[in-house]
Length: 469
Ligand code: PNW
Image: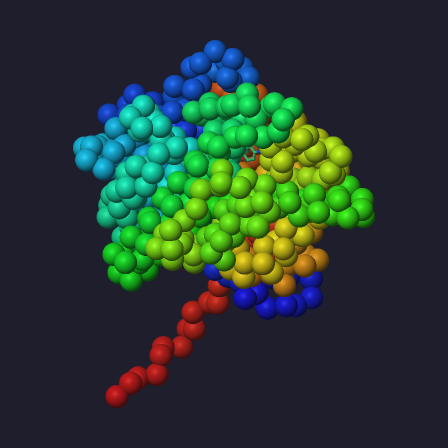
């Protein structure tokens, strides 16, 4: 717990801060060294899916230029780096009986060693959306419970091969995006959408809830495995990271206050309530009836308490009103946010108070140490204002919430999913013609902020320790 003091609050010396990336968004080299195809390889090549019509074949070329990325991290002086492992580099076909690809293991092993040699703590995401394509072709990927065993075997290989050096694991990045954007609206891979969800009779979707359910189970059984076979020996932390944006009612009317709470229940509670509290939110059960899958009591005992910390990704705040809410896919994002500076992408506006309110809400409700694993802003031109505001806001309240990490999204501009290379979240600008990286003022700002706010490690005493007899 961070001791309450007067602002500016000092963060403890072991506070983790740095930048985040994800394999598919930066690596490129999709055919190198035996990598198997992922659902994003395939999706990005379908016409009309990506804003600029480009794919992930090159991205920021980080599979080749990873040492340059490390140089950047060193120049920024970060404590930690969050990156993800591509499942299809480790097990190209993905399944529990499919062969392991040593070349893929070697790549991440080298990266981890090189980080540690530079004094940077690796913070590793096991799944950041690049599902091996074969698993989707075999049985529908996240829509089939088969995935649980395949995912657990993949994570076992990672714990075995990297767990001696990796002490922070994230099982999944943003289940809401996997479920809703991938299996409800179809704007992300594997691009499943149902027109029924747009029908005037209301939302009759089933797939997002099924996919989400299997993501929760896969996460939970991987954590069970880690705790039983690795955690004592390796001494790491494991958890999940959820996206979730703060929600505020449009006005004080009871309907709108309720609308804001429902938005939080669906965006966050859908995953956080089972994982931290042991049940799905009441509102979701009422809204979905038998379309919401149920856990057996044995599964529930594995799901409940299956995260050592709260991994929080947050970007914006949604202004919620019952009347503005479309009658379908209730609670699934269509709120209009008109609260602050508009980012380069439609869903993001700058509202720093929301960051603070969300931190407080999560801490009160789930009582787990919070690791902010993503926070950022997409701008065309250099503009550090939103980040400055979000971090400055911490000064007002930081002492009250147990927050232990902050990763800015992202180390560098990269493949921004359906937005292609148009939307730039990087704190380092990338010239995609030359792949040259240009540090932005915002990166320097973030680094300086943490250098000013994190307590210095105590200098070891010059005195030799007293002799023991
Ligand atoms: C996150 N939304 O995605 C991801 O973890 C990153 O890979 C991504 O680059 C980053 O945020 C910026 O987009 C999100 O529509 C994508 O609410 C979309 C939404 C939220 C998060």
